[in-house]
Image (cartoon, rainbow, N blue to C red; front, side):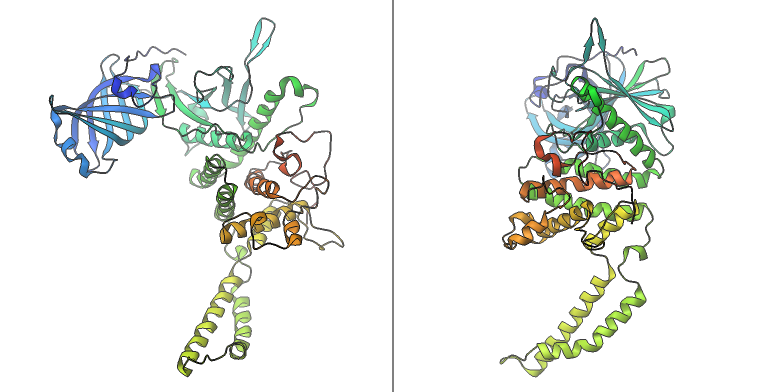
Length: 540
């Protein structure tokens, strides 16, 4: 694919103060900017992309115009858009999502220099054309430490994401990940032809989905940072850079596979292929929905990626975010899958009315027997207090009888996908199935985080050692599990990926932290641990 763009270089000292600029991303242009109140001002500007994945630029505001004078009265987002033409290649440059970060005045020459950051900028030919193919440059994937060499040949791993047995994307390695020039340098190239984009989707949001699914499966913050769009003759006519906050920390890698005798030699390549297969299957499921419904799942996945990669060692903070997301996923799932309101309720309206009325018939007498009129309380005050308590008890009954408990919502979710869940003693002497134990432990953790701000194992209100052990008994791993803070957090960390595996129809092997712990070791494919599979072949 040919690329014949030329670039303005070197950048000014002013823009270099904002970060180390990538050489082939710097442009200077004459144009104008539009303010939030839709006023237009002429200007000259330069723009570039930094090694920290930020779009940065300088606006040179001529003659110290009125905008510069009133800038202090506007928000930091005072500029809505910026557009201009750079003369070296006659390219159109457009920038969106601008935030002013610094304002310098040159009073002698009477001009203002405005330093800014932006969400994205793109450069394109003045000659418009229909896009035929797009290339996206991706950070944090693949997993391979190197490009394999076999004799004089170099084997560059390539992978295909398929839909309806047809290739939709091709992902190829760009460089040896041990020799990056900077930490977030792109390591993979994703190619997509325009004809493969489903109705209602765009190339960008499709690749956003691919990246967040790769993140879920691989346990890395996978994102694209740079895009090229090609004509039919393979020439580039548009390029786009986007600001990203990319975290280099790894987190829970959900997927594993059966690699057989090739594990030691091609470990990473087999992992990557398994991850690609998972992404293909997940996209097939997502394409069954209109884009707006599929995006509901994308939003939860994006928040999951952000939550597990936040720069914090406090597990209570991450645990609170993850338990909240799992609850939100249950709500999103009900809406997206069309689970009716009646199905989400514990009781039906006529049942609730009869229950509440039956209880209410005895409630007045119960309150009368329990409450006592205080010495300094008048008869009228006592009656008012009694009525308030009766009303509040009825309201609590109404609310609690209207919805399922969180535990039952999780059980209903997994049973919807035919997962085997057995409660204790549903079968004689049965301690409860593995997934049931994980759900109850998750709910205990969630309640402790919501009400007391700490994980259940740390909660001083839970002094009873027996209750603590019950919390994380997870009896299907008696020879592996240790009831402690680590395993409580692992259980929280696993829940949302397990839920998405159910939604996307994944029924393969997965990495169970309750067996492997934090060591990162995979469960051996040749060993069968009790309760290891997400889904049992039997159904309730």
